[in-house]
Image 1 (cartoon, one colour):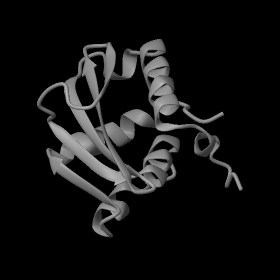
Image 2 (tube, rainbow, N blue to C red):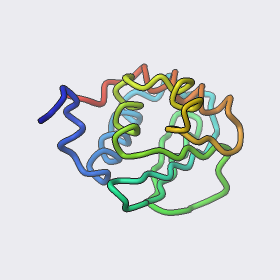
Image 3 (cartoon, rainbow, N blue to C red):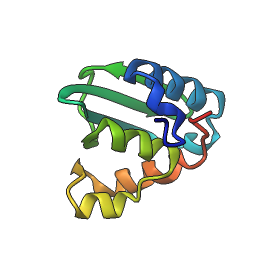
Length: 122
């Protein structure tokens, strides 16, 4: 059952590869950003960490921990996919505990808006 989110069929590795491709193909939305995000993703009981570095128009992705993040988002694989497709209201997810944010919450909101500039599904 696909539920209309084509990311459901992809592994986290594949999703992160896609994120890197999309962000680097269109760097304008984060041209002036220099921020490192960390994602702690629980994929059906298996927790993995990923970091996304937005560096003035260049996006780098690291599995594991590569540096000190300004903001860490902790969420399930399901909610991570929803975040990427714009189907997650991060404020509501935050309030209900589906999304935990450590560090600068402003960066988390900024990221949500940034991701809306991209099309990760399909």
